[in-house]
Length: 101
Image (cartoon, rainbow, N blue to C red):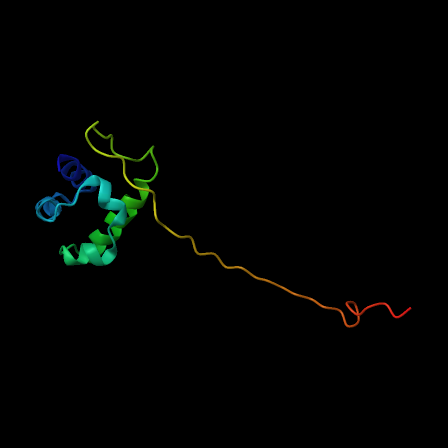
């Protein structure tokens, strides 16, 4: 639980340490937390957004907190990426008809 306390302190949100502790939230399950989970814990909207951003950054080893040997590594980063895509299909009249020779 000290790692969670350190992580929250690093974010400037140490007031949530007790809530995380009471709900047995450890560093290894942070990637599984959702906005709804944080809302149930009583985390304000702005803090939820900052926490979710910081949780996504934990997937980058360069940004992660140093782990002790007793803590299991966090699970895989479960995030999606949304992009716009344009698809075009063009069929010229008669171009696909069989040759009539």
